[in-house]
Length: 306
Image (tube, rainbow, N blue to C red; front, side, top):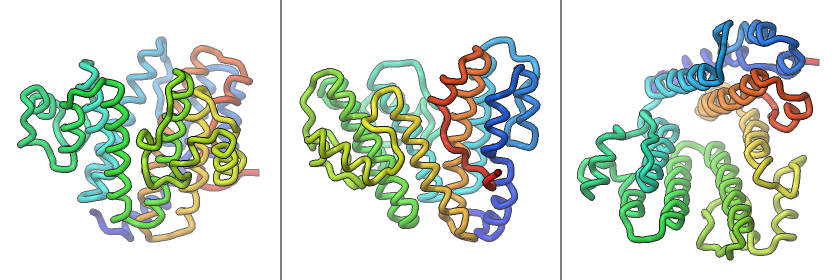
């Protein structure tokens, strides 16, 4: 990894490019698409001035993600690099299970190498950390069960990696685990399926047993994640998760010259790309102000603006 003090100083400077509350309000209130794009000056985003289709928007943000991943690959090595890239390997494994032609070019192993290994049931060229996920994918279990087991395996690995980085990063993963378990809970409820503790991921802030009692579950969620909109549902869970994550990782900004500050910066960059993509698409289709209120998350801004 690059020198910690150099990275910390660089990130302190780059943090100023995050979209602030005040800028976000102006973006939402902008009357034209051109005005909206102009407001993105001095941020990480330089959108083309003449966008004519949603496909152009999706392509732009995919390029932004690609650039960010390339920066992560150059910045980190070892567990830190694995921490950010492992999700793409599991995304690819999930799509191999589903037989989809959708895949990510990112990850710790080239997709085509992984695909060839998967089709031949030969994991000799597959990194050891993916062996259990590979085994799940090749098992005879029903597809939905394999996907659930794959998700559980991913978060188990991510938590183990985070433990080796810092307590702060480990506790961030606990938030991710809670919301992943909440997604499983909501999915099971929607389809009228029985939820068992074996369906849930360990090491979250919310004990697995709490998910078996709905009233107790929402009390737990409300006590751990203050100001959250409960009960959660399929429409608001992603936005609420992003909000809790951003509120948590903001704490790292007062921890100068630490790995926590650097990791949080890149987590925040990933979230801001997703968040702005939603906003741009919504502005392009001229969605209502009420709609924007439903999709906005608190920004990881450099400073609070009055």
